[in-house]
Image (cartoon, rainbow, N blue to C red):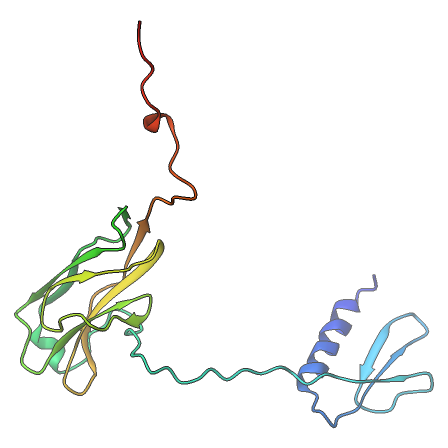
Length: 192
């Protein structure tokens, strides 16, 4: 393959990305066998290439509140909290056969200020239906797999005042389709 082949391929991709529906693109092969692309009519022997417009996607606006981007303290009200952390579960915890139930314990010092609420975010989405003034929360219907939890104190305007560092956990559930196996699960061998 000629040394300029990667350059030619990159140029072709750039032309495709930058081209509009009405732009004309030409392709030809020179005497050395290299493929060329251009938006100007080239020497004789070129063919016109039809470019497909780039596919675009615009995500709809989400109606659910999103988790704070990272563990953060904002100016102002954050100074009123000297500590805000997730005590349970700890990061890296594996929760086996919980039936989808996960207990969350938070620690906040001093106590939650008037006009502030606590929200829990799982996998970047706010978990609605939980008490907003309690530091003991119970999640239900948590699916099997890895999850990330973040708690945030939010003021009455909806602005995050302070948030906990993200905690990752794994929920494991025994499956009827694939029950656990291993030496510890076999019945003991009778001794004579």
